[in-house]
Image 1 (cartoon, rainbow, N blue to C red):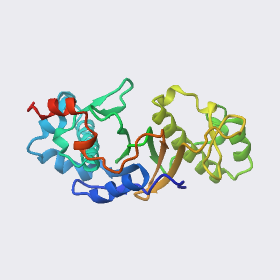
Image 2 (image 1 turned 135 degrees about the vertical axis):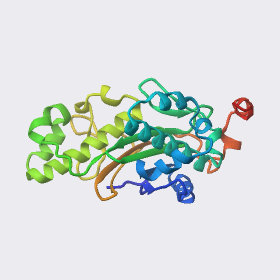
Image 3 (image 1 turned 180 degrees about the horizontal axis):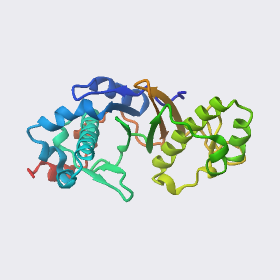
Image 4 (image 1 turned 60 degrees about the vertical axis):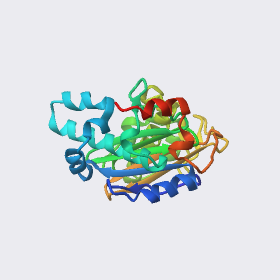
Length: 268
């Protein structure tokens, strides 16, 4: 399911295709990329300036004892930085990745760029927007979420009424899609699991955002999309157009606060 304002997620490796990511951002104001952490691990392990590239994440990387967790962590941070560097047309090492309360990543000095990270299994995905908030979420496509068990915790009355007549397999598929949509929406809001999933809903056929009683909850500022990637994951994105400056030029020289640029120019 895809709506206007979103594009197909792009499978990227350290070598790209970064031009496609730039084109996606120009066309839609947002871009979603994905990869497996194994595809990025060789670059992480052989990068000659990994400490500088990781910046403030270096200490966390070094103190993470479990090698699997450590490797996934560094691969995801490289994906974040390489993606941001591609759309900003700058060097990944020059970007300062920080975190808000709750762990949401952001780029210091680039308030107009919003970003979201998700990972599950061997998949990691990054959403980036220059027009407003963005959230991404992914789940294994074979995960089974049972309607009868979770309808009261997850579904609005309107959603429950639409799901009830469906066959069990179709119910499970729609429940999984709804789960990823609701996760991506709450991530875009910066709420995560703190926002009750029964306080908002989605129309099954169109994916439109609804209030619990089934009335429209958006005037078109929100767009949502769900895609199957790598053949085994569902990846959803929620994007809000907040009416920010949609100039096509997202290069670091025009977007970065000049005072912050001076600080960034000094070697660490």
